[in-house]
Amino acid sequence: MTHNTAPPSDLTFWSFVDYAVRKAERELPSVDAEAMRMVLTLNRATSMVVYDLESSVHRPRGLTWPGFRVIFALWLAGPMEAKTTAEISGMSRAALSALLNTLERDGLIVRERAEHDRRALQLSLTEAGYGAILGGFRAHNRRESAWAEALEPDERRELVRLLNKLMAGSTTARAKFRS
Amino acid sequence: MTHNTAPPSDLTFWSFVDYAVRKAERELPSVDAEAMRMVLTLNRATSMVVYDLESSVHRPRGLTWPGFRVIFALWLAGPMEAKTTAEISGMSRAALSALLNTLERDGLIVRERAEHDRRALQLSLTEAGYGAILGGFRAHNRRESAWAEALEPDERRELVRLLNKLMAGSTTARAKFRS
DNA sequence: TCAGAATCATCAAAGGTTTGATCATTTGGG
DNA sequence: CCCAAATGATCAAACCTTTGATGATTCTGA
Image (cartoon, rainbow over the protein chains, first blue to last red):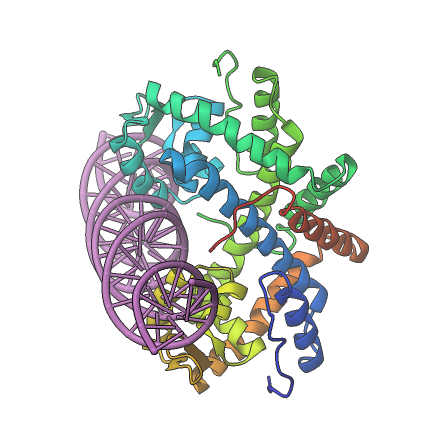
């Protein structure tokens, strides 16, 4: 990569994708520019949505984004083993273990040994945990609505379909998954 | 949220979105289920892609995902101020400041005071920094290609269009941005 | 001109994540 | 039956992120 073209002085979070893809295309003929654009855009969009939800909804209520995900999973699926909680909330068992220390200290969840397997942990929400998710989720969903309004209903469905197809392709792509 | 229905015993990272949306819809009539599904799906897809890229490409080469983003930005846009680097790589100036300690210690970037403004910092890649990104990006882009193959070319373009439209709507949604 | 406001980077404290190791328990094959 | 392998949780070290505060520099308007 040579630097024979000055970057635009007003490079921004938004415009960087376009700039980066064009420059890479120009200087690295072998690059798959469309794949690069797709992954960059996917990351930017998600990053914006998550930052908004976490900073405007959850942090002010004393929850982090990962903390919310765990409470949310326990709320919807009910008491379950730690292994399952980690799986469906998208984190490793080690990360969940560390996160549970905070949630337990704050009185939001309870850790208990599982009956049938004394290695396993059974997780459940406390009353305070329910309280936290009840108010939090309404505010969370209102912000989700605000974001979703940017798209027409059929566009939202199409976006979901494409993302699901992308995820389904992970097998073919031989992607590495969290263990 | 009452627990009158047992969760499927095979709840997984994939199937949880469907399960969660259906259950929320059934028990919270006021929920915007489509918005919920969109945000959940967006997060899962991104999380899978990022985990794969980071764990299969960057960590084995000694870079974290945020570290890669910074090196990548400096590679494409050339030397620039820390403020701009933080902006286009999607992190706060405080987070960048901490991250730069690692990158500088590893000899990948150089921090210098800016000429025109002695508060500002000028960042640039070292030779080692170039080396790291040259090899790393090819592998990165190959994995991006593998992911992108899950979609048809026109589907990839449509996905990018929808994500961009979503981001453009953040203004209307009065989203909170990273300062 | 010159004080107050804005801006840039960094620090500090608290928290979450990764990989790899360890320990207890359970499972499975000989 | 029993020991080796697999499994579930936790620990440890290194790292990145957030919010809010601090110190240094630059800008601005009276």
